[in-house]
Image (cartoon, rainbow over all chains, first blue to last red; front, side):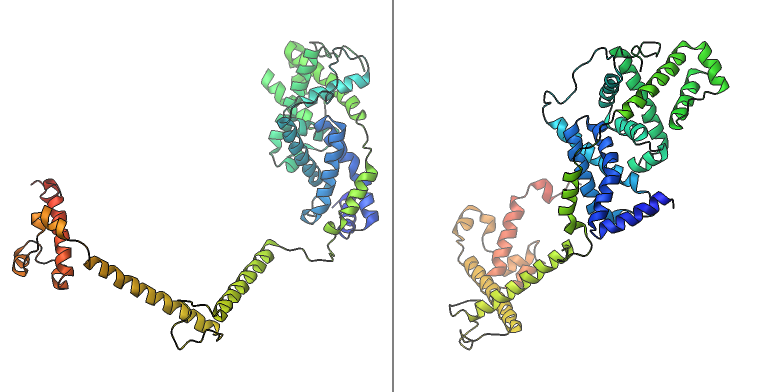
Length: 188
Length: 223
């Protein structure tokens, strides 16, 4: 067991006991992590804030189901992933509201715009590809951890990751962000 | 190395977060424009991902989240002031409540002075007397049995009153047969002949009627 896991076990025991300081520490430690995943999955700040809150509330309520022998982060991110999927499912049943997406930028000239361009390409991925991509690059989980979190074989995760990259690269070429030879047109 | 092998190597390198191509892969890239484009695209994408990660905004709702968690605390804490009810406990409560309600209804009906065919068995039962539950159940069973018996007697009585004129007039074969005829008929071994008058005769007529009504092929199979 690594020190981080030991630390998590102690913190979660205090959270289970309803200790206020422990709940504050829990928020400090995991809110940013969960929010980053939700924001990258949903591409919408308010939805990401709401989903982060749902995730952390749910995690604390079901803390008794977490096995202390296993790392806490993948368990928490699995809850976040499920909440994001639910939110995306609700969104797909509602008409798209204007203003939910960033404006269509044809030729971004700044790093911030390039980042938005990449986020747009990530938003166009299939849900499972996107989750895999965000967990790997945003959360820096290993392929093995993602496989455990999403309950998929490691080979599947590797394939999804590669396909996600390939689809993003193709979209960036189509949008003119990167040229056909793979060199970006607008340098970082 | 062909393009498929090269792609497989890229998949493994991506999963391992490295970009160091093998010697065979480098030789392949030098000769394959498509794979060279893939490698260049991957490198550009890696740089964009780094910018994308750095541009992730921070959450702004820490205070709201802490408040929500603190308000939700009683449900999360193991030391609860009120025990959490499990579905099994809820069903037990419902079952106990139902049994108590049935007992209450049974006792109430025993106390009820109004006439009750099932509970008041006769003149010996006092309308205001509260019977124990075992006796109430016994009364209920007796009542059901006496009712069944009454129903059977009533049914036989109505059978006796059935009009037989139409059958005699329209189906000559269904006319009453004498005991001697019955003994010589193909149905002489029929059990209803021992049932006596009038039931045995009526059942015999009914079977005779049905036999005549059946098609010839069914009665006498070919061969």
